[in-house]
Figure 1 (cartoon, rainbow, N blue to C red):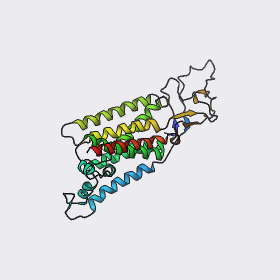
Figure 2: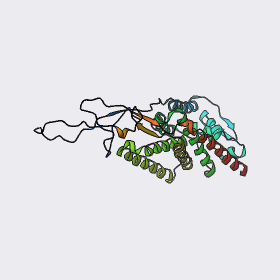
Figure 3: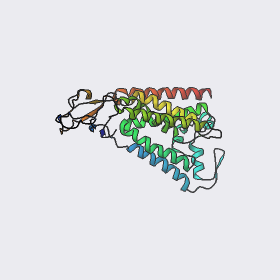
Figure 4: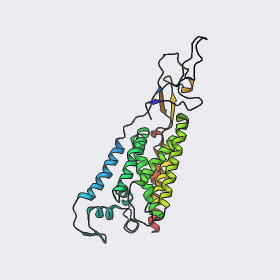
Length: 299
């Protein structure tokens, strides 16, 4: 959320125009120019997003620089540390179902197949992740990231037999969180929100088409699981902001100030703090464990 907010695309917007007091002989004034109204909003520093970015980059570099003699791991030949990390931590259905190595649903989120894979996921985490953490806060960001990523791994386990790695499920969860935030606050952002929603839906459709193209090695089920989890969790635990005056009245009660008068500051108040919704991530985790347990029992 930016420190200043001007929404002059709306019919009744936050921009305030001064009343004109020019004499009748003066030329007719043009349309009032909108003035920027300062808004106090959440500006959480995206520390968690930067730490996660450093971790996934560090894990990738570890696989590239650590020397390793060829060794047999779980029946596979590992010629490098990268191979060893993949065999030990990737989402490989055989090891999850038969050997109950469920930790792979988490460790696969920190592994990447190649530099291009790492670059796209890292860039998305840097752009989308930092935006989400700034408005959602550290705790909600981490809950959506990890629960969304784990859900992506679970969808991949349930519906895809291929081995997979990558933070894409968690990234798509953050994408869903940003989509929910913009949609939920479209009245605050005005037409800019609708343009952003259109762009995000276009990017989502483009990713789906790329994933469905012949020869694609993209884990579409992982993406879908992460996105659905991000949308659902964000709708339940995400922030719901209202604009208020300093005295607690809604911003719509603000009168246009006199010419040259300072503009009053508005404040964003969250009507859905995480403290009121702590049961949601616990219930989600419980449902996740039940589904995973039932699947493993059948396997």
